[in-house]
Length: 95
Image (cartoon, rainbow, N blue to C red; front, side, top):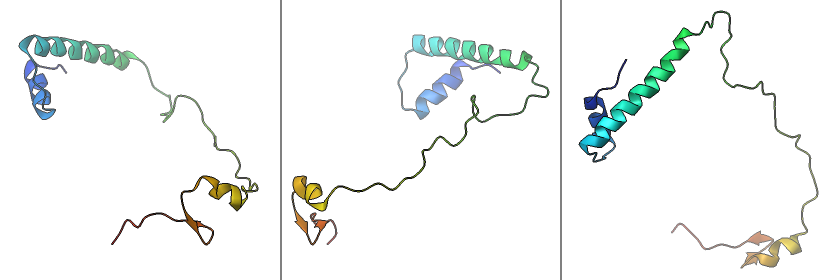
C-alpha cells in the first residue's frame, strides 16, 4: 500500500488544513517511508507467538485498599469558604 498526494489532500481537507504543494509532496514522501518501514514487520516469523495486549506482563498494580483515619472535621473546614451542618456549602448550580 502506498499513500498518494490525493490521499494527503483528502486527509488535509477532513482536518481542515491548508497545505502548500511542497508540504503535500513532503507528507506523501514521509508517510510512504513510514509505511515502508512498517511493512518490514511482515517479514518477521510470528508463528507460535501468542498475541499480547501489553509489552510487559502486568498483574494488578493497584495497592490494597486500606481504611485509614480521616482528618478531623474541624481541620477539613478550615479552608472551606462556607459550611453548614457538617457539609461544604456551595452555590446552587440548578434553578
